[in-house]
Length: 98
Image 1 (cartoon, rainbow, N blue to C red):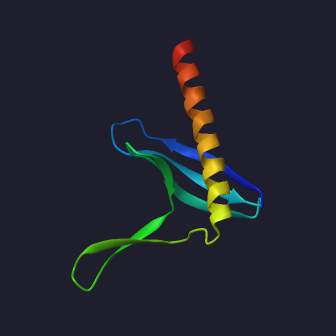
Image 2 (tube, one colour; image 1 turned 180 degrees about the vertical axis):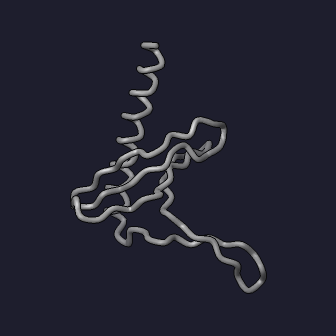
Image 3 (cartoon, one colour; image 1 turned 90 degrees about the horizontal axis):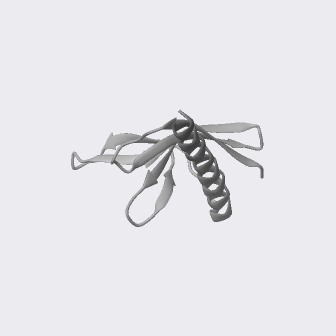
């Protein structure tokens, strides 16, 4: 499966959310709202989610969609992190040139 990613928004702050992106599968299906999260331990992608209130009144989140196969998740992560590094590098080069 061909997996591409397009960074939609970089977020430059001290919080874990670093960017949002879209993931395109086989040039036929797109997933908007994928988040890039960076913690002290690792970086990972978070799929689009919705919130709901459980029976105890607690706010919970569930993915709207997500890969079932581990190999697809790895391909998505690779595409997203590659696109993210390219955009961050381009941004830093633009800042250096101005």
